[in-house]
Image (tube, rainbow, N blue to C red):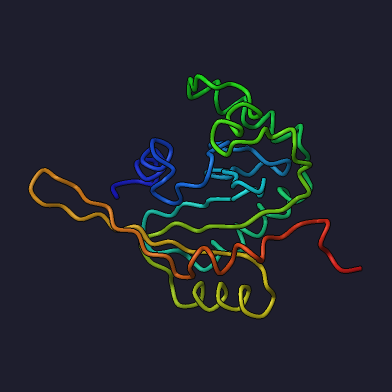
Length: 187
């Protein structure tokens, strides 16, 4: 990709590039500590997906960046998610302005039937991972049971045609059961 912006635009235009079962709810979401999450999505169980984009090979601190965003996401509530989606749908001129209706349209149940409990996942999208980022992600998933995923996107060109290849470092199904939730924390 020529830029992170191009990568972001591509995913915003079609979130199924990453996962067809995600609903995009926010773009450049400002946290309470004045940082910006590239993209936020939700899955069918109401878990928030933090998506951090890197055009090239990731720097080691990308995992810390995702964890920092997760520390904010775990503390927000339903009304904040509704506001995030409303801001996103307004800025992007999405016809479905309500998170409740957009969620129901995508997953068949209204968002109001969920009580967001802080459940979340982190996804790092890059062309490649540096070795230390890969070790950290594997450690967090295997030992700490923290759901951090990495997906690699590569663009191939054939004349004027462009093709996008996607490969997951850890299969999404493997980390789905590890979704972090405030309600499942041990005392």
